[in-house]
Image (cartoon, rainbow, N blue to C red; front, side, top):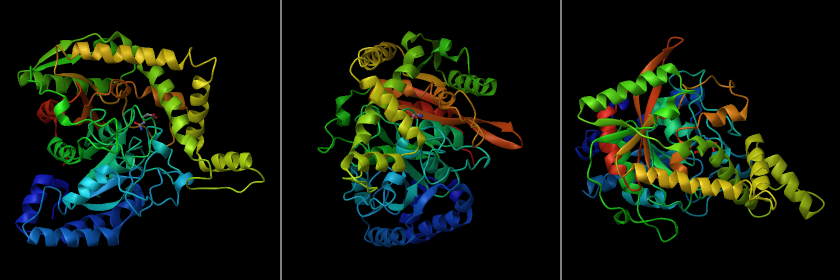
Length: 472
Ligand code: GLN
C-alpha cells in the first residue's frame, strides 16, 4: 500500500474493489504514526482501538454495498473539534481532561459517512498563533524539515497529512490556520466561506472569523471533504445553505494586489508565486493587477477583532463550568488562579488586548473603528469580485521558520498579512503547494493562495487544480 500516492478517489475505488480493507488501511496509517510521530508530534492522542472498530464497521458496510465516499477513509481531527466521549483540549491545560458531551456537526456528518477517526491533532492553544509552538503539550515539527515549524494553528493536522499519518484532516481557520500550515507542510487547505460549514462543536476562538475546513494532499481530496461537511445546520444560526450563493461562471481572470507584494515578501516565495501566475497564463487565464487599498489595514483590524472576540469567548473557562479548577479561598481566587494556571502566554496576551479594546473609553477608538474598516475590506473585495474569479497572493510571505526562532509575537502576527483579510471578509480561500525552495539541504514548500467570492469554492478548486503540484 503506497500511502504517499493514495488519493480519496483511489482509496474509495480500492476499498470497494476489496483490494484492501478499511481495517488494513487504518492499520497502515496507525503503523506509520508509530514510526514517525514520536519525532513529529502531529497527534496529541491516537485513537487506535476506536479507529480499528470504526474501520471494521466500515468494512461491514462496504460488504453490504452501502458505502459512501468516506466510508473507511482515515481522517485526523484538530483538537478543537468535539467528538462525543473523547477528550478535546484545544491543546490547552485548561481542557486537558475535558471530554466532549456531543459530536460537532462535521463529525456527525462524517460518522454518517462511516469515516474512521485516527486521533486528535496538535495545535496552537485555542487556535491562537501561527506555528503550533503555542501548544501546552509541546510543538509539532514540520515533516519537510524537522528543525522548522509546521505552521499553525492547525499544524498537527497539516503535518499528519504531509507525513502520511492520515489521508485527510479537519482543521479550523480564524486568520489562516488551515492555509498557512498547509503551505508550510506542502499540502492543500481550504478555508471555507463563513457559514458554509457548521461551527457547532468547534471550540470558539473568534466567532465571526472561525471556520472548519478540509486539509488534504490534493485539491480533489479537499474538495470532496468540503462537500461532505458543508451545509446549513439548525445548531449554528450563522450557517447557510449552499444554494444561497448563485453559481459564478468562470471568467478566467485572476487579480493580483501588487502593492501588497511590494515589501516583506521573501524573494523566493515571490518567484514561486510569479511562476504559478505564469502557469495560469499558459492555461488561458488573464492575470490583472488590482487595488485593495484597505488591505494595508487588515492586520491591525484583525489583531483587534480577534482578541476582542477571544477575550469574550474564553470568559467561559472560569474553573467552575469547564475543565481545570484550581481551589482558592473565594470565587475570585478560583477564577484568577484557574485562568493563570490554565492559559498559556499567548492566550493571556489576547485576553488582555481584547479586554482593553472592548473597555469603555477605548471601544470607540479601537474596536468600533476596526469593525468599520472591516466593512470596508469586505466591500472592496466584493467590488473586485465583479471583475475577477479569484485574487491570488502567496499564502505566507515567508518560508517556515526554525522552531523557537520567532519569540516576538508581533513578528509572528506580521506573517498573517495575506490570510487574515479572507476571514475578515468571510470569503473562501484555497492554499495550494506550487513549488519547493531548497534551504540547508531540505526542500521547503511554498503555497499559492486563491481567494474567491462568497460561495466560490467550486471555482477556487477548478483554478487550484491548474496550479497544484502534488508533492510525492
Ligand atoms: N495566526 C492567526 C492568529 O494567531 C490565525 C489563527 C487561526 O487561524 N486560528 O490569530
